[in-house]
Length: 84
Length: 278
Image 1 (tube, rainbow over the protein chains, first blue to last red):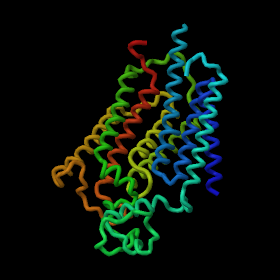
Image 2: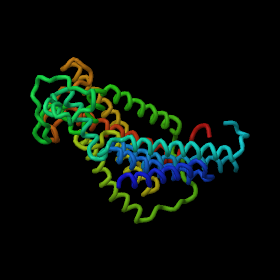
Image 3: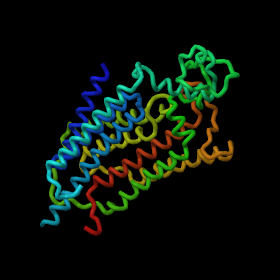
Image 4: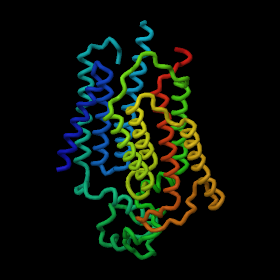
């Protein structure tokens, strides 16, 4: 039973990582990266590593996504200022 | 890969890499022994304990426990099974064996990790340091629901982060995830109110004090047991809150340090400052 769930999660991780690589908009790439981290943390849980799963969910899916979004916001602000 | 390679070849290359990964993943699942989802983790830690602390004469005779070629180090001590709230002094008393490896055996490594995180955060702060810029045009405030909701969620998230790093030696978790959870709660406070301003001096002194506490605990080990970061407290009974010696103390220090550090980094990044070179 668990291998089917793991298979679905793996396919979702692969699709979201392809979106993160090939997407034109940076914001959707960042969000896809967060989803990849979430799926990978689920896989760590299936593979009996709950410590790593908690760390991956807190750092990869939670904080680093927010930090990337903040950094993207700052970078775009700098761009518009230069154009003016 | 060169930049003038056609787009089609790039896509074919990426897809074939993905296909190889999928095939490897399923091969790994096929190679796993039957019943792998039952208790692989428990078996590994039990194997570790049996090899080093107790012997496994009983299970060794029946041949049901060890893989081929594995033998316990000691065969003179009689085998006694491990019980959750009764057994004492196993692997320094931590029910979560990962913690006793990360903090106890490889505590110096963990000190290095904390230092690396500190250097990274101080690099971010050095790049983005500056006076807060005064806002010229009036921006929209977040809604009342966001304001109240983040405040309520913050208390729950804060409590959960503290639980993760205080119970690090009993349940999965530890200092780093706990600190990150606390920092994401503080990020929620930043999102809920525009111009939210935490106590900077408090954050910095908190972080410095918890970093110093880590080293002081290590030095106490150096002077009492003759080894840096040695476990100098009684290890207690497996499963109790007051067990595993100094693992809980060090995880509390790490959790507070990581939480304060990441909160300060989020603060530096989210506050709009005037950089000198922009």
